[in-house]
Length: 222
Image 1 (tube, one colour):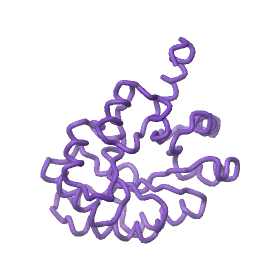
Image 2 (tube, rainbow, N blue to C red):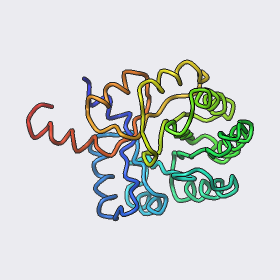
Image 3 (cartoon, one colour):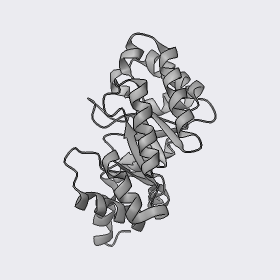
């Protein structure tokens, strides 16, 4: 396993409600040291991170998180503030109620509206696979593609289950050529990290990776 290469595709994540600045700062230092793709953090820390680290560290944050049922206008406001504070990547949660109502056009329209705001920055769309049927997952692949998002993302990590390899395979069959895949939620081993990467995920959201890498380094296995 080329672990160093895989780390370049990791969004080093800390989204727990109790996250302190000390923990966030440690996360950022690790992300720089191990050259991860970004840090994925609560929006309240974006400006402070940007002020300290600047261009050295891409900042990802979440919008409509974790349940997705805030209004489109609310998600737009969150996105605009996050970008103004220094975020370069936005992971938005879809309105799962709209999916359950089969109002797929509304989901697509919301993605389009957020992509307009994000512009040339990165927009990832969290569809929370654990709550969806296969038919709904396929529909979300279409919505994400038609909405112009950059990534489809499996999970928030706060649902009843996280990323599954069978969902990655399903995404690959149904997303458009310009949409990449992010797996997140429940990726807690280096073996799982490698499996999802090799399955075709361009990004991997996890809070566990660096801890595991440090353990390997201590054992002189890396």
